[in-house]
Amino acid sequence: MYANHKRIEKHIELLSQFTSTPGVGVTRLTYSKEDLSARNYIKERMLEYGLTVTEDGLGNIFGKLEGTILDAPSVIIGSHFDSVPNGGAYDGTAGVVVGLEIAALFQENNCKPAYPLEIIALVEEEGSRFGGGLLGSRGMMGLLTNEEFHTLADKDGILAKDAMAQIGLDFTKEKLRHPKSIKAFLELHIEQGPILEEKSIPVGVVEAIVGLTQLEVTVRGQAGHAGTTPMGHRSDALVTAAEIISAIPQIAVEEGNGTVITTGQLNVFPNGANVIPDKVVFSVDIRSGMEVHVQNVIRKVKELVSSKNENRIYTSTEQLLYISPKEMDNNIRTILKEKSEKLDIPYCSINSGAGHDAMVLSDFTACGMVFIPSKNGLSHCPEEWSDARHIADGTDILFQTALQLTEGNGI
Image 1 (cartoon, one colour):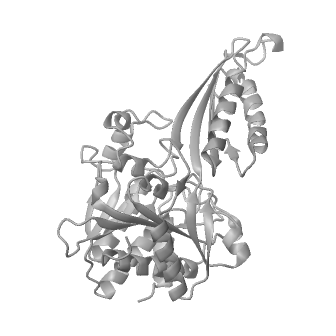
Image 2 (spheres, helix red, strand yellow):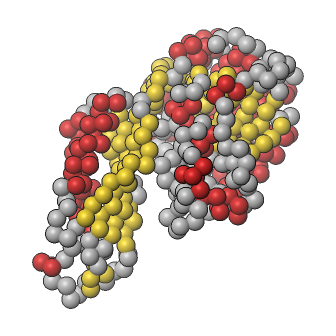
Image 3 (cartoon, rainbow, N blue to C red):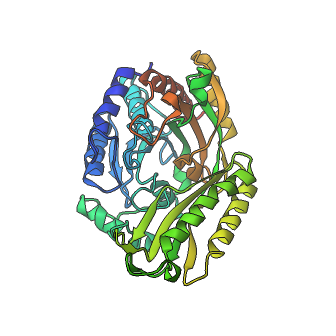
């Protein structure tokens, strides 16, 4: 009853082919044609492994193995299957593949759960198309209203509901998942950092996930001709945005305690080489393990942005996402460690510096996460890579944990 690392490797390799940027990493944006190809592959495997497949009004995919207890809550295992632009083949996808592998192990070993087992593949965790991130988990747990979803659009103005319809998904289906229908949520993820590799430890049991905030800053100025407008008469939105962006890292340095800030998205309008920019919109991603530091940094960034309102420059800040630091369930952490020891798989406790769907679900059900090493600590890039044998180690731990939880033991 051990995971098949070659099958895991094959699934990841095949899913990596569903990308809009062949040869330069995986780009699989939510509700794109690449999304459709990946979801069809995932659903086919779910059916192959004996699961009943459904999709909700967000496009989240569920594969269910019914339990013997009528109307019992499910033990859910999975992750997300979208990517950042030019990302790697393992972020999120590895966790979905682990869910598929666990379903295969239940089938091959004729496991009959008392509580249902569900494998889930979640949409838009990264927020690369529609912003904010964690859309699939937030939406299914009621943290995104129908009204908010119906107005959600990408940078090209395409509404999420219209993008769903374009690939044949039904946005009118039920989106909400009642918390009482979930017994526990388990997620495997690549570490996306260097700690496990440096320690030569194949598995990390996640203790807590950092707090995560995403701000969107807009700077407005006045467009003008690049050759005929004197420097003293300009209201250049990009110059002001650059001043803000260059000052932001120091805020994190001064806050300390592992606080980090990143500007990863920058949109300039009208984006002409010979036109003074009249509007710039950029992201500010703030993370820290303690809520007090997150709040301090939010306040300081907003103060910095508003201080630039002068000389016909106007600024604004919108908070797209706020999730406080989250601790994983203590009982599940204990079970994960016990299974690691029983399987003789070395592990260590670790905290997550990245946001994950488990941090959303942890407010509604018992959650547990395991990390496996990332080569050179790299992620969100084409060079992202993890050893399938390490993924198999994590799968074995989650499989044994799922067996215990679906039998009704542990929590």
